Amino acid sequence: MESKIIAKGDVQIEYYISGSGSEHIVCLHGHGRPVDDFVFLNDSNHKLILIVLPHHGNSKFPIERIEKDPMSTNEFNLLFKQLLDTESIIDFHFVAFSQGGRFVLSLIPFHEGKIKSVHLISPDAMDSNSFYNKASRNRWARKLFISWENKPERFIRGARIAHKLGLVRPKVFAFIQKFAADKASFKRASVTWRGFRNITADLKLLEAVISKNDFRFVIIMGKYDQVIRTKQAESFLNKIKQANGLIEVDCGHDFFRQENIGLLKSCIEIKKAP
Image 1: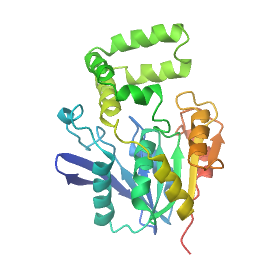
Image 2 (image 1 turned 90 degrees about the vertical axis):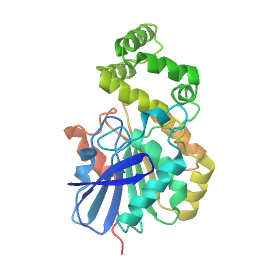
Image 3 (image 1 turned 90 degrees about the horizontal axis):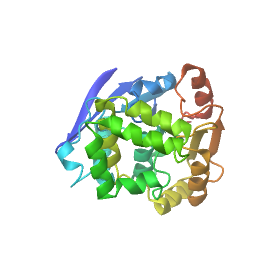
Image 4 (image 1 turned 180 degrees about the vertical axis):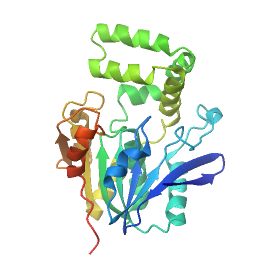
């Protein structure tokens, strides 16, 4: 796959193109995940646009801006529009996983009439008032994370105590251990958590755009996912009046394990234009 770059000011976004079909599928990966996760969608009718999120690959966002001027929905949307113009994309499908879902939910209201379907796999940011999201908007919580960036083992120790006290679920603790395993991994988790705090979904606009344009909007959840749970998706879908948009599959947060790809693929419908 060929790597391409779009840039605006001090922000740079890398993306890849795979395939040459008539149906454009814009894919956004999860935190710490590769764009290769979506190659199972390759098909003679499909053309994949694989976007690399900031702080991954060659996508760049200045570290010095994170606290004073974090990325905004408008800023990311301008880059996304630049990508659509560069690739002459008129309409498209969205497929995104976890953190990539945060960006898709923020982009939908800007692209009314262009979106043909949305498939979100265990998306982040369905609840802006969750502890995870509210803490990212708290200056002192962010300072604490910055202090842990060079000593992630201190964060793991605190999480282990919370786990033993029953305040952190076992699968969430395992998830924490994975991303705090080394300094580089933990720092990326910290800078994305802090830096993406203003990338949020406008529920009223989402509801209006989806109901007015009648495209397929689906949230795919793992039945055993303890990182992002089904009840969060149910609550979110009720808020935007899309209660029938939930699909639950027989796995956890590990959708891209080889044995789960078939389950995931069966949930995604990319209809060819007549």
